[in-house]
Amino acid sequence: DTAVSQTPKYLVTQMGNDKSIKCEQNLGHDTMYWYKQDSKKFLKIMFSYNNKELIINETVPNRFSPKSPDKAHLNLHINSLELGDSAVYFCASSQIGTSQETQYFGPGTRLLVL
Amino acid sequence: GDSVTQMEGPVTLSEEAFLTINCTYTATGYPSLFWYVQYPGEGLQLLLKATKADDKGSNKGFEATYRKETTSFHLEKGSVQVSDSAVYFCALKLGGSNYKLTFGKGTLLTVNP
Image 1 (cartoon, rainbow over the protein chains, first blue to last red):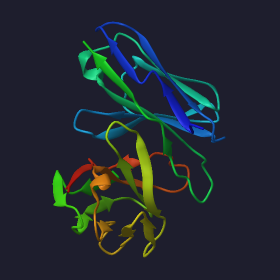
Image 2: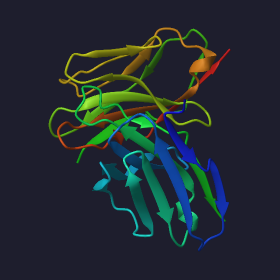
Image 3: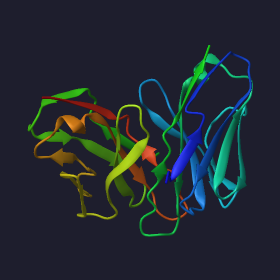
């Protein structure tokens, strides 16, 4: 069973469009994250939700809006896509407060904005 | 602010060579330290971790020791295989209510037969 899944795996779209990426985890974790990986492989956190509540919001343009309908899902909606949004977006989850607190990552969504 | 610095790649080795990837950190407080691995076209997987000074994390022949005095967490493997070719990320996480991982820039390792 896939622990953290993302859809779609690939997304090619035009500048100015609005798109969404979905993430689901079946690990029973209470915290989920979105990370962005640029073309040089640099990873940076964007958002984190704990029990459906936003707890981390890094300096991300407000065109990016996360939505957590329940603890198992954290979706990312992007308005008015720009060329610079092209990247790989990773979802992750963890269980805060345990001795592990390991973050488990999804396979990534490769976004290309033309 | 908190940061992780790891050696820039790419690193190219022959099979069975010894591997070291350096990682140092700057953090307020006492972070947990991690090494994640990203195989081509895949997401990140936890390779090993250490949560306090002098802890050694190990997995799949890889090791790293949390050195508080040198603020380092260098990754080592005695004999690399072609299948170890991947990007390796060092990361830290502060304790308490700070949930985020801060990553280094990643080091691409290529192992040739």
